[in-house]
Structure formats: C-alpha cells, structure tokens
Image 1 (cartoon, rainbow, N blue to C red):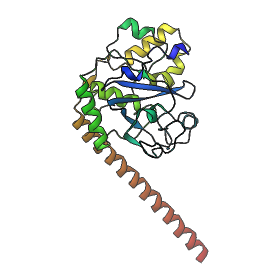
Image 2 (cartoon, one colour; image 1 turned 30 degrees about the horizontal axis):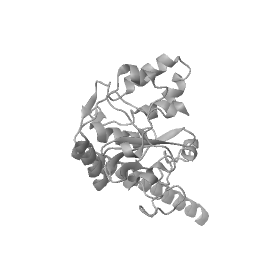
Image 3 (tube, one colour; image 1 turned 180 degrees about the horizontal axis):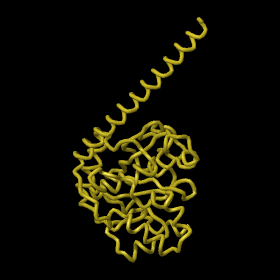
Image 4 (spheres, rainbow, N blue to C red; image 1 turned 180 degrees about the vertical axis):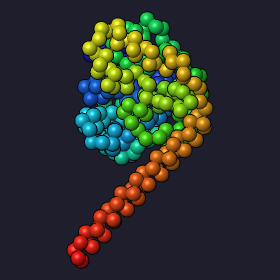
Amino acid sequence: MGLFSNNKISRDDLKPGDHIYAWRKAYIYSHHGIYIGDGKVIHFTRGDGPVMRKGTFVDKIIVSSMTNHGGYNPCPNCGKRSNTRGVISSCLDCFLAGGNLHLFKYNVSLATFMSQLRGGTCTIAPSDPSNEVISRAKFLLLRNGFGDYHLFKNNCEDFAIYCKTGLVVGKSYVLGRNGQANTVGLAACVARMLTPLVRNVIRLFSDVGMRKDAIKVPVESLVAWRNKDDTTVTRKRRLQHKNKHSVLTFYKHIVKFRFVI
C-alpha cells in the first residue's frame, strides 16, 4: 500500500500540534485529529450515529471516526467512547483504531500537491504555530463547538485543518472544502472520468490554501456562529415537528367526525 504510506510517521517523531490521520476501511477513508502531547489526540467524531444521518450506503461503509482501542473495549485509558460524538479527547491507540499513523503536511509546494494521487494528505496552506493549534483544539473540545458531523460538509479533516490554520471559506464560515471530501464527493466521481492532471487541478483549486475567499476566523467567533446556527436548525426542526403534529391531529379529527356521521 505504498500509495497511502508516503506520510507515515513513528510515534517517537510526533510533536504536539501535529495534524495526524489514520486510514480506515480498506483505505476508503481516513480519520484526522490534532496530537496535543502525552499520547492524547483531540478529534471530531460522529460516534455510532450515521455520517449523513439518512441510513445511506455511505453510512454503512464509513465508520471512520469511531474510537476503538484495537480489541480492548472499553479502553483502559479512555473508557467506552463508541457512543461519544462531537469533539473529544482520546488516547492515540483509540484514535488509530488499529491503523497506521500518518502526518498531514502543510505548506507543501504545488509540485508536491499535484503529485498526490488522492486528497486528504496535504495542503498548500501554511500551519499556525503549535501553541495556537493546540489552543484552538482545546477550546473546541471544551465547548464541543464544531457542530454536527457530516461526511461532506463538516468532518474530522475540516476540524483538524481549521485547528491548524484558523481558515474557513467565506463569510458564512463554510467548511467541507477539504481534500478528502473532494476525493469521495460527487465532483470527484465526475473527475475520475478525466485525466489525472485535470483531477488534481480541480482538487488544487478547492484547497483552502489556494482559495481567494478563505478567511481567518478566531475560534471564539466560530463557536458563537456554530451555536447560533445550531439554534436556528433546532428551531426549524421543532417547527416542522409542530406542524407535522398539527396536521396529524387535524386528520384524526376529520376521521372521528366521519365515523360520528
């Protein structure tokens, strides 16, 4: 599997603030996180719920972000974490879940980026200093402030890249522009019919380090925006539920009225 092992790193070479990842499910997908030292990783998970929450084929294949100590469940260090979702801290073994350790690379050259056969391994964007990276990760852990996990719109790689760079896309703080999402998304399926050069060009101009609309956002602002967005979504869901309940109640009254007649 040399195609996926170029960024392999040993545990002894890990440094606090590193963006690390491990391949899951026959190299279909990888799980990303921020190493904070002392054998601990902060990462964004979906727990045991569906990635896209629709019971899709993707939900069944990709169990990438579930923690697993590699046979010991619960983990003697982390406890039972399979039902935990959101931003969590776990030991390195649980994060890797039996996979190999890889280092995500930042500030790579155009030549290096274009030479990668798939996304989710590097970015053109430079990394911030490690103390800022760890500070963002710990703040998001404390507030569990990265929203709901979504495979294409808000995933573990988005979390790690934000912690490393502080970058989001546009004034709406859009995420889901990472290399891995671009590899497995619909656009990638279309791109596979094109030449390798064209595929990599498409991936290059989607990279947060190349985008003209990428902006630096303080973690406090991101969490505040996330909370506001989550509140709006919750209100919409409650309203939809209330409307659905009202319609059902109306039909029940109609049915009762017909039987009375």
